[in-house]
Image 1: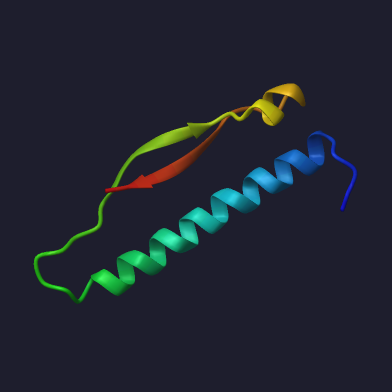
Image 2: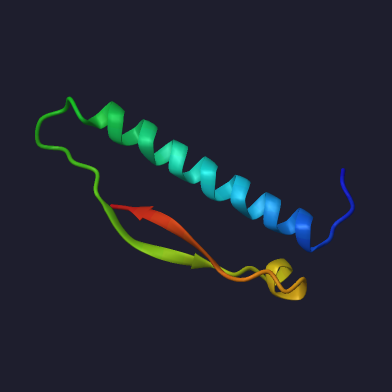
Amino acid sequence: MSEIDKKYIKSRVNDWVNKIEDLYSTVKKALSDLEGIECKSVKHMMMHEELMQNFGVLPKKASRVR
C-alpha cells in the first residue's frame, strides 16, 4: 500500500468515480435492449468523505443513475 497522503486519496477517489461510471455504462448497455426499461443519469452526487476532508481533497462529482 502507498503512503496515505493527499495525492493517494485523490488517486483513489478518481479510481472510484471511474469504476462507478464503468458500472453504470455496463448496466445501461445491458438494459438497452429491454423494452419498457430505461436507465437514466440524473443529478450528480458530491463525494466529500471524511478522509478527503482531512487531507484537503476537494469534493468530486459522481454520477447517480435512476
